[in-house]
Image (cartoon, rainbow, N blue to C red; front, side, top):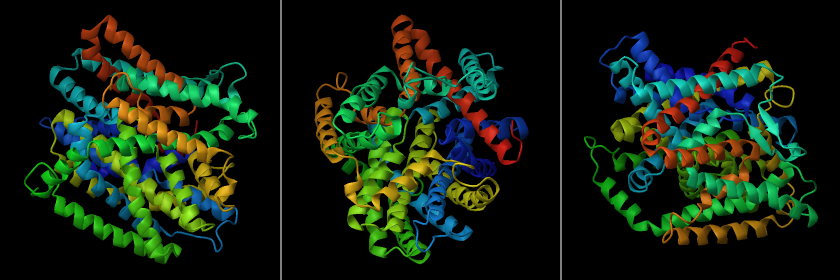
Amino acid sequence: MGLIVALIIGSAYPYCVLKLGFGPNLSVVSAFLGFIALVLILRAAGTNARENNIVQTMGTSAGQTAFMAVLLAAFDMLNARGIFNPPIQLGTWQIFFWLCSASLLGILLAVPMRRHYIDEENLTYADGLAAGETIIVLHEGRDKGASAGPVKALALGSLASGVLMFVTSFLKWIRDTWYLPGMQPMNIGFNWSLLSFGSGLLVGFRICFAMALGTAISWFFLPHFLLKQGMIPEQTYPATLRWVMWPATGLMVAGGLTSLALKWNLIVKTFRGLKGSRIGRADFPMQYVVVGSLAMTVIICLIQYFSMGIPVWLSFIAIILSLPLMLVGLRVLGETNWGPISAMSNMMQAIFAFISPGNVPVNMSSSGLTGTIAVTSEALMQDFKAGQLVRSNPRNLTIAQLIAAPVGSIATAVVYPVLRNKYGIGPTGLSSPISVKWAGFAELLTKGLNALPKGCLVGLVIGIVVGIALTLLAEKWADMTPSPAAIGIGMLLPAAVLMTFILGGVAQLIWSRTSPESEKLYRIPLASGLIAGEAILAVVLAILAAAGINF
């Protein structure tokens, strides 16, 4: 059943991310599909939450691999503009082997970090938390006749979220985003999404407050100053984002790496503990991680050399540089529920614009490799978080991910060309905002680092210094120091999306102060439902649209 769910999600997700520009929560969608398959279709009365967790894990793994269809779309956009000379046309098997090897490498590299991020630091990983809570509530509801309070909270949240998305999607006179007067060019307003609200409810007020600081800095205070100093050509969201992504990325990278450096003893302890792992223990054996990672590294270098003409040494450098960026991405995701894939990939593009100037294939393949490693490692950590709640065996979850990643890769390799030929890629077809940004940044860097916005590298340095300072302060005053990861994400995402997210954090604070007992009992299932309803409907609509049924 896990393979079937992985095939469904892997086939539906490319259209979803290319059309919407983002990927709805896969963890809870896979959890629901797993429950439907195991309990409602197979009528497996003895099915338990751990078995559902296995199915959910495989669906998440395949979908996260399929997310990288955005990279394939960016390649096609650059081909259409004549940037690649000669054009790079990846065939089905080239796509499969490239995505599969990079995905497997991302999974293997993330395995040793479970103890650090999940057990030691106990980061939130809100999507994984929502998936685990959903699985528990669904199975408890089946055993208790769906009468328990948490079950009702999950159902109510799912219904409300799905209905709101339906209304804002199909009743065009109701706008899904209400902008503040005169603020539409800056994307400042409120996005009526209960998925965002539920994510904020799960993450909590402390992280949401730090994200609000980032939002205020990027979208309320900086734009006027940047325009006045001639650092941006106009006061709009895209122009401002091209500048603020540099200090934001500096904040996240410096904060994440400093935090890892401060906890070096825990990381050493983690690797020592894994060193003696055997197949019968809870953790996936470390020797398999090492051998598998080395094998995937060799395969990736060979694939990129023969498919795109990328020198082996450049591919190897890209893999090495992907490691620290992956670790930063895992921390940011754990705290904020947003993986900074775009920012990390853009940073890799800038690095390779310096290492190999004007070489667009190297620029795109290196950033794509970073993105693929990041998304698959993030998926595994979300699944580990869900498994923590239902007390699953981490080794089994790792094996499930390793089995499902090739399914997502072959689904993407087959489905993406079909979508490209049917709808087209670009303004008149599947527009894929992420791909537009990816391809546009690569094209910009062909002009050299001088093409970057004026003063952005100074902003990068400031972000690095502030990120290190906040991380050091958090060692002594953790509850009073805002998270640099959360501030960085707040600086990158549109204010309209984050305002709704922040309201969820404010609601969590008010609820915990006014009724702590009910907040403890109902907050997680209610928030999980708010995430699940919109995510499920988005995937269903994407499947229908890909099948030619459009509303």
